[in-house]
Length: 264
Ligand code: 3PY
Ligand code: MG
Image (tube, rainbow, N blue to C red):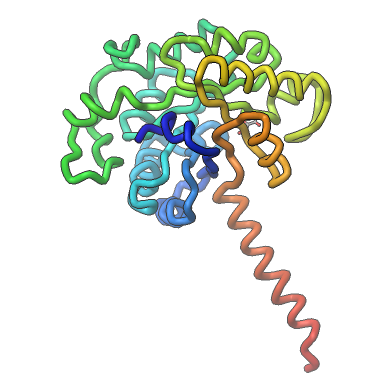
């Protein structure tokens, strides 16, 4: 089932991968997340790294975790490498206008889907664990289902949200709350300021009206509840690097506390 179809039945929980390690992608794949953002925007992952991570996630999760590659910029080469890896979708940062959304669709969709994506998905079959996976199957059956997600994370993006989300070939939008708030002169990943809340409400309202999923980074369990109630259907709630720091700290703090009780 495509990523977009999966968002229709329940709220999907995801994490990001920032560590260029196949081993760590396997482990994160096994954790049970519905989807994973492979973050080329804010981690220096090469195209080769992200291709390996897409494949490792498929294996680690037994094909259950959808990989969405966040490309570093709206460049045709990034879109090609991400989709030709066999990713379930791409996420493009800082889309601010219908023209940028149309450009993204041109790069990401084959001509049958209204774009100009060039043929060459030779790595794509290895993200599909089916025994019959091969390049022709990817081209004829899978490629049309890839999620093409535009990030709205600026005031301009919010102003143009209807045109961005309504662009044919755009599957949905993902809100970057930190950048959006920065563009509003606000700090942090969440808040209840009127302009910010109105922006999120506008985006979820549009998603519902157009039948397209909207996602967001939810920094805390409380934010997960708020965002789910608002109508966001795919949430980014954790990451490999933060999980590593958190897990190490929990172990260290627990043992430090335990040692205090030992009389030597
Ligand atoms: C942001 O909050 O700006 C993001 O890009 C989160 O992924
Ligand atoms: Mg951002």
